[in-house]
Length: 112
Ligand code: 5GP
Image (tube, rainbow, N blue to C red; front, side):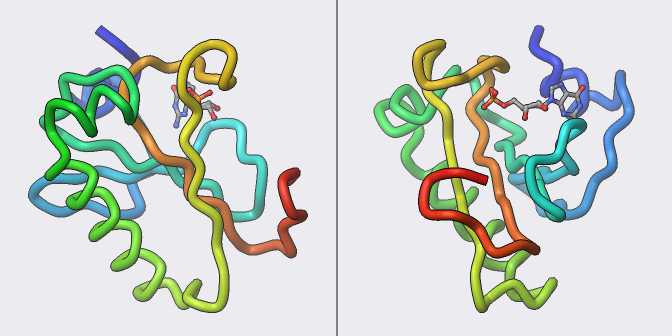
């Protein structure tokens, strides 16, 4: 089981900042921006976004619905970044599909 499934099951704590029936979002333990939130789907059985796109594209829609709601509720509509790392070469370390939401700083074009 991945660390994110343990967070869904409440086996380990997380600072939850958004939740709806499908999606859970919590602060990243090692933030790379003033706001750094991880969005995961509660029903995901996929390791990465390409598996999710193939098997459960509706979950990507659920995730982006949550992301846009979170941005609106927290007044980030002026700007934020959504990132997904796929595979070891893409920098992925937790193999449970997730999106990083970064905001609260002037973000460089591809860096922090
Ligand atoms: P990835 O590297 O797979 O794209 O992203 C995994 C993210 O999960 C990293 O940014 C890392 O800091 C975060 N992370 C790893 N373990 C934990 C944890 O136990 N709690 C929280 N909140 N974040 C974690």
